[in-house]
Length: 189
Image (cartoon, rainbow, N blue to C red):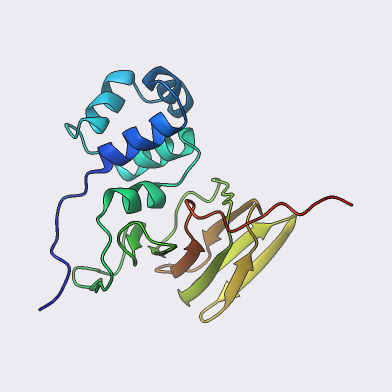
């Protein structure tokens, strides 16, 4: 009762809007992402659904995140319940959005391990909370080991990478949305 009704995400429209806002051609996005122009066209026209890996490649090529593209594809609700139904102990890495729609905040839950070699850098601030297990995070030349209940705050612009150090690790990442310019350049003195 009152729960958000599941609708298929129309991520293609979000990809097209982002690409056009950056004034990029499909050929440029294809070159940056390593995906073909026909496949990108199918995504934009909702004739193909990209895998998580492909969506991350497209997001990187568009200088955004897969979470941001999915949020832009999802209609926003002022009150929304995201149920944990169907969330199982992860034998394979999973990511689950905890906030749906195009809002001022994003929150995702990562379960299991993921591509530890992938480096992240977001324009805006984010907080990482370890719900279960443990992680190692590399940021600004230092390694931080976090366990259950620990948090790590990253100021916008900090390059970082992380990996799970314990099986079935669950990490919640909360961030200011990319479409909100939360970081202001300070005047140089």
